[in-house]
Length: 141
Image (cartoon, rainbow, N blue to C red; front, side):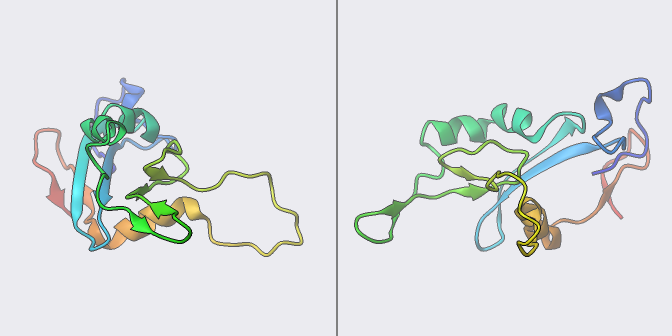
């Protein structure tokens, strides 16, 4: 979410791309229903920093979220509930992130980056927000 009007002397709102922004994190289930959403954090903060400050994180770490029925795979292996995050998040038992590895050999075929997967899944669900004046309500644009 880009912000058009913020106090320029406070750089906490500037993200890595030097744009004034506010972070929006959302958890969406397989049926594309929002299960958790948080916004209002300055664009300069990392995804991992925000995640670790949320109630959802604490509840998931304590086993009170993502604690549904496990799926049986094979030979007694079970798969618990999990969410998918991009490379800005830590790898946790309940949070899958892209596999980080050394640079590929040039002979390997390029593949689509998995770090953009959560954003591409959320894309159809999100509307673009714009803040025209600091005191205005958020409006669709």
